[in-house]
Length: 103
Image (tube, rainbow, N blue to C red; front, side, top):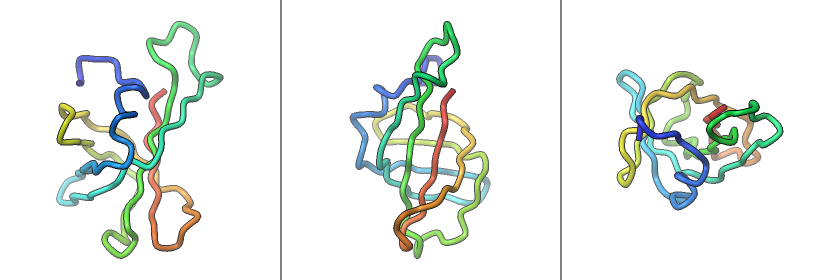
């Protein structure tokens, strides 16, 4: 998929499925919880609408997850490549939420 423009529609069929996030020695299993598109934040002439992926990880499995660059993979998609993933606030104390923004 790295030669294609990634857009929200490419990820939509995989909501609720597992993704693998890898950074150096760390491998994290995360579930794609939702996708949000941001038309107002999209630059004029951009090849896609800006969007974010929101992933969930069980806190007890990976309590020390930090924001940073991770390779993102899914068994049905080609290697998505590196992306900066931000750890964000979660409404549930036992779940870590992560956001991947595609501008």
